[in-house]
Length: 438
Image (cartoon, rainbow, N blue to C red; front, side):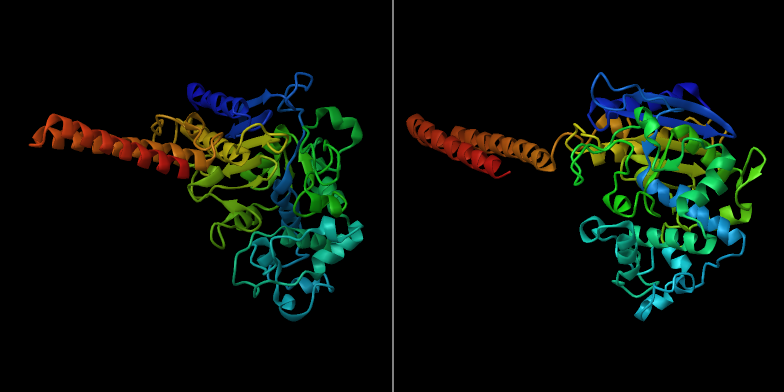
């Protein structure tokens, strides 16, 4: 890989920090079994007292990366062991999940987000205990017939978490610690991290509904309502730990002699199945957070707090990005900042590859982070600016026509001057009126 091209990553990530999208970030790019770019940027928070980000040590709230790093991996293990089948109805494992069309919902539908369950519910408003929150998830009515519509659903991921617990006889966090994180040496990857780690954890929201700043406590309110351990969110980790996980996936389910899942299972769960979705995972459609250059076999996921993981088997490469963009972002549109930075990071990694069968890709003139379109300027202001330019051109055109008419007119100079002055005032008023509306 080209070190000069990989250096583009620094520019992109630092541009996002300067724009106020996030206070810091941890990045790891791996290829062919090695971490080729591992770096921390900025600080855990916005003040000078906040420590610097270190890719190997700084712990981030992964948000929805929990769905794939945690929940989907647990389902893969149980599938490997023959303890569940993808086309089994969920009610077989969770008898309470029944009634009407719910009996037709399968494990596969949950993984593909085609179960008919809605995106979510305000569990944190509706329930008082984790047990009540669990019951509320299970009792949620379907909004659509099973298997017919795609709806990205946190509730579906929660049902998968409950399914893992029902089949394994263990809590989701205990199962993952025992079967995935400890065997892989991912020592900083946990639900509900110990309070002793607080100094290494990047803070998230300052004024959540809970009423106090969050640091080391899951950002997602529904995951918190479920006790901090949920199928859709709750995991904390470092970029370096996620690099180990990504390499395990690239290796076909094994790492340093330890097999987590079968290689055939990795292929099955990461192959596109419905739209761009695989089983649990998303795949790269050539746009969005995976950028423009990852291969058709690439798969990954993002997290609301500003995290992403993309794995490209064709290039034997992975890209990890962890930020806390929900921590008092100073940019007007931090979601736009992180979206562009995620895509740029994936692009920069691909563009640095020098031994691709397609040859070395041509570097673009600029990256999204260089252009920063919409980062700190509301769309309305942008439209007003464009409208103002149009009005100015229109005014100039009218003025030119008026001058031409004046030169050709057979009227007296005094009459021509009077006519031109009147025309100029009218044009100015129209221009002013249009600007005020914009």
